[in-house]
Length: 530
Image 1: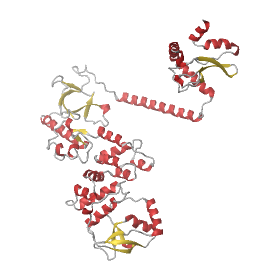
Image 2 (image 1 turned 135 degrees about the vertical axis):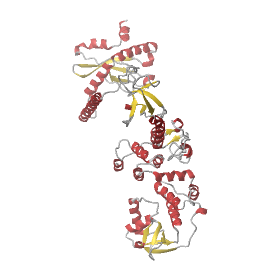
Image 3 (image 1 turned 120 degrees about the horizontal axis):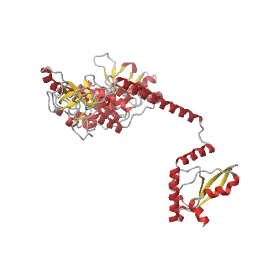
Image 4 (image 1 turned 135 degrees about the horizontal axis):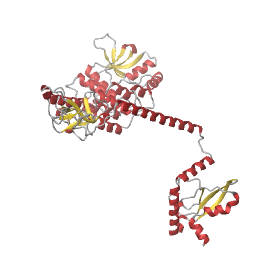
């Protein structure tokens, strides 16, 4: 949360003489303008236990109720002490009584809460908004920044948090979102805010599921910002309409003076370098639609019914519109009159929105049928959907079977199972082993001391089964230590391209000499014969 904030003494509320007295708790009412909305129940219980032992050490601040009964007061500061005293079953509480106006009361509440270390950022933002709403001429972003000793950018960012949608505020209050996440989302429009909240928790379907799961974690702020730049932000410099035109959509006005444009609001978008970014997709689309309607009016006045077309394929569109022809459903022609089926059309999206075209949508047109734009039939789509469903079912079935097998397998494989898996692995790499053996032979001829002398030995793990085993003496490649392992097991620490072994040989016990002769590398057998 926020750290303690030093308040400028020259701008603080002027001192008013007050009196400290014990006031019954039932004569004090909590203020409705208190910015603090959330209280930690565990910390309140801890404070109540402290009050039972030592009492309230610091008096709360109250003021007489305006137009109320005598002897009744409104709580200005000290809501936690007041609630903890109620939990401690105390009848009175020490209070400092001061005569304050509504403006002074709200300013003191704001300053008192800002000096606390556990005030929520959203409560702080609501306090600023309440002050500015109470006296808009007196309290501005500049005056508030001067009073609390913060920058104007800080105050403006806090005020923007009050524009969060209700679902985002709930996630922010319970700690699912950080203040950085909340600020990125608060700069969007309400509908885009809900989309961004869903993007923060992609594995959850609803906000209620996110709030119920105590282990739910949002994506990083960088990932959220990249998604916003990719899915929400639009570059006005590539817009099909004139950004300076105020009459295109009178309700929105010109884009040049719009506060939703990044270049017009540097306090809200300090990190965005490009100044021509629009953050309101709904307004952008409304202007594109207004441009399309303007281009269609002359054609409709002549009695024509222009078609609405899009350059995007239908499969690329999330929600295809029934009155729009997508790429593949029509053919663009050079000029009017090339065929009897030629019709006028207007592009409704993209950078060419509002462009007039002539298209042919007849699949059997003798002039334009040479250009194929295949579109699957409903029967083909249904068949493909069944195939995809069968593939997903088969994949899930294999995964479940594999998981059941893994559950029944022991955590550590037995020696025979491990050797069987290793032997199968080397059989699959037969070609690589052959190439590696040749490379090892060439390396030994060039530098015999590089890999050390290799000598075979025979181990007998069970009657009737012999395993070839290689022992490598100390060398620079193996940190001056002897390595000995059977050929059916490959340690991860040794690269197979530096050292290759032959597969395990299984022979009869009386054929030991023959087996020993066969297990030797080619170059060593030749050296013995010579």
